[in-house]
Image (cartoon, rainbow, N blue to C red; front, side, top):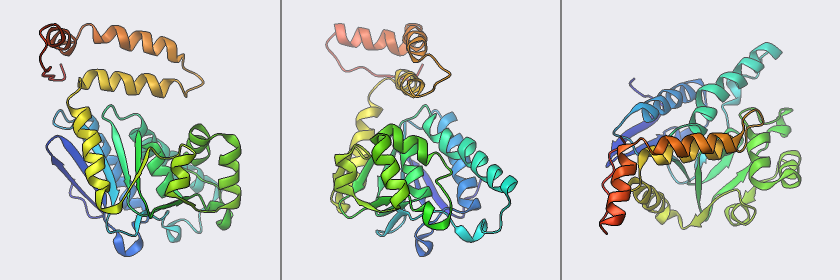
Amino acid sequence: MAYQQIIAEVKEQIFYITINREHKLNALNKEVLSELADAIVFATNSEEVRGVLITGAGEKAFVAGADISEFQNYSLAEGKELARNGHQNVFDAIEDCPKPVVAAINGFALGGGLELAMACHIRLASDHAKLGLPEVTLGLIPGYGGTQRLTQLVGKGRAIEMITTAGMITAEKAHRIGLINEVVPQAELIAKAEEILNKIKTRAPLAIASAIKAVNASLKEDVNGFEVEIDEFANCFQTEDFKEGVAAFLEKRKAVFKGR
């Protein structure tokens, strides 16, 4: 698929996705969401990809929200379809991706932008970033998992406060309340994300995928996370990577994992 709204490239086993609508503060529209969905399918299925880095073009915004003009006249049914398709094809797909996905929040992460970051497994933010869910100022609520993932990350009280006041918070406060993993200077943001992903790249890919699946299961009411962990733990024993990891440990050398 030839992308028009995002830039996507694989370099040294890291899949870089840049939302490339700087003139619109990288706002999400249908085309961006479609391209993101396609890119995540590629990342999920590609043996070449060991990790994903998502960021926004420029220094002002990661993603400053959704493109409101596209859905201003939607009916109830159209609104439900918009949210459901976004959940399944993009946001849940990112969360369930077996490759670790890091959000490098390089500026405003508002509305759908913060929801995109929260779907990622790890979130880093530049020191000037601002985060928030302002949907109630439009007569809406977050529709791409924001009410659920924000509550999981920061707790019910803070989630309700952020959503109902529609206020923005600084990167420092977001870090303090557990919304992001780390705050770094803007110039160091991508390098920090790469540092984390480069470390992950040296670990066993199938074990990484199993760990992500098991952690995600802890948040799903209809799934017994402990049983998922038991199954995924057991599955690791039949991999070549497990044999290589144990052999390397006993031989006091670095393991060379192949994802098999």
